[in-house]
Image 1 (cartoon, rainbow, N blue to C red):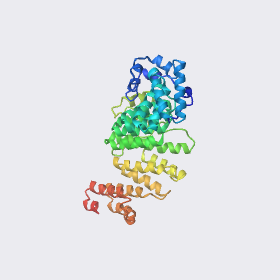
Image 2 (cartoon, rainbow, N blue to C red):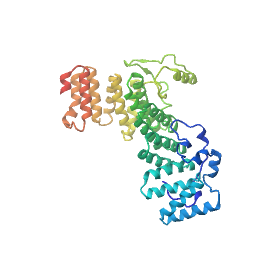
Image 3 (spheres, one colour):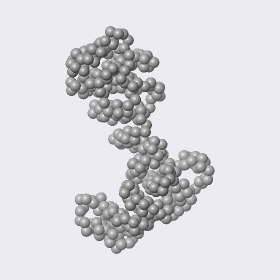
Image 4 (cartoon, one colour):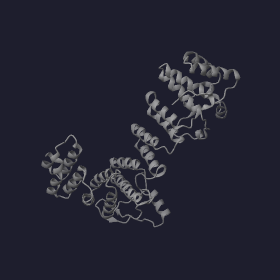
Length: 403
């Protein structure tokens, strides 16, 4: 990351136009510019001095420090750099080399503190610089500090998806699930519309949040992703936000009803969505598909791909959510469609059996569990055994649950 600079001008500098409006997860200059002289200087002067020294004497001193550094005479270089910092505290490259020298001395904390000052002065345009500092801050600082550096990395390269997912992971550590949703929604709806991984993560979050509105959101995301898969295979550029605008809304009992007071005008309909008394979650496809529609989508998709692009993973998640939502017949219908095309994964066979349990078809359910029982590897399929037991308990078949 903070490789030695050949000259003080080797860093690519950028103006700090956004510093006037700092977000709560961003860095302010005062956080790390600890030197009193730095704090007293205005931002305009700081930008002028960040990459130039005020006198030829200091330029020569810095050049000597650089030569000593390259000759691995770190102690001599350190003394010269500290004097440069004393006289020109806003000259960013000094802090870069101080960080490198302290790193050589094994003084990681001092190294980190100097690099923090360096990046705040230099404002590097390379996202990897900010990302590396985020990783170091996780060792010496806090998750919140790491998030602020990561936010800067994203500002430098907003299209870099791994930075967004890393931010979502850090936010999970803080327990701020609402912000995790905000980050994933940004990816899913704007940065990379219809991004598969973002959609799956959002769906898992909503599924685990409890409550019917969140579960419906989780289902609609996955349904939209499957339809997006199919559209892409068939040559359409539609993303999950564009698909299924005419799908039927389905209530908790599985009945299909038109959404109340829905406007045919797209702009008015969008406003109605925003004003709806729903949880503050993402809005893209917000209607559940009918059973026939989903059977057609799944059948056409798996016929074309044989599930080689991860579609079966999404379908597996979707089946679990259909069961949680009480759409047992729909889960059965989709699995019946799939069994004519591909060999069913064990998870799908268990979903089928669990759906039959909830429909009181106990013997049919047991027959579908035989494949799992015959393998007799509870350590490998422990979650499936637990799911079956919970299903039997839900219908008060406690002896079967114990089996």
